[in-house]
Length: 187
Image (cartoon, rainbow, N blue to C red; front, side, top):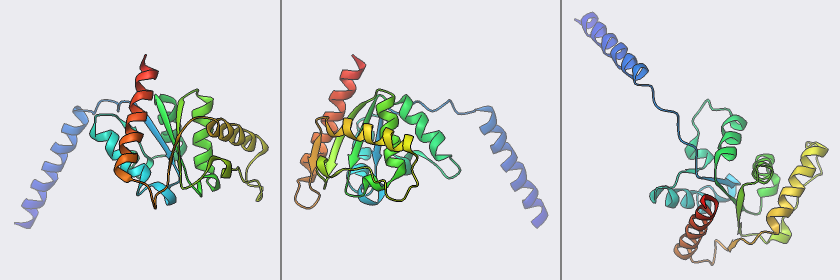
């Protein structure tokens, strides 16, 4: 009896797999907005809320924790998303410049000539600096990062204090700014 049910289960599994292979999913559409952020500072608040707000109105945002799955190669998936997006949002935070990934993503957005919307979250633009102390970054990367950071600091952005700011107002404003920039890029 147990063997018969095992055979049935295997048959059902094979049928499901064949069905999925025959109906191969279409290639995923590129994202509209790439959200660049330092996860420890903003993933559970500013970046995460913006992702869900944009998704809720039909815009395709890219947020690493929501748009990637185990097994995806970081640079492959992220670099493609940046190159294919229409607008980038850089959520700057106190620990942003400590992250190689954040700075790499920002530099790639700037080098790809993407429209970048800066959000200065709990940090002033003047406080953002590329750190050079540990020698883990090549001179070429340091120059790329500095250049991209300076360009972003000279771009009009949004500022938000997570302790005293009005969250619904900020989120509505950030979403509106992203939509306006998407429309501008589309035109």
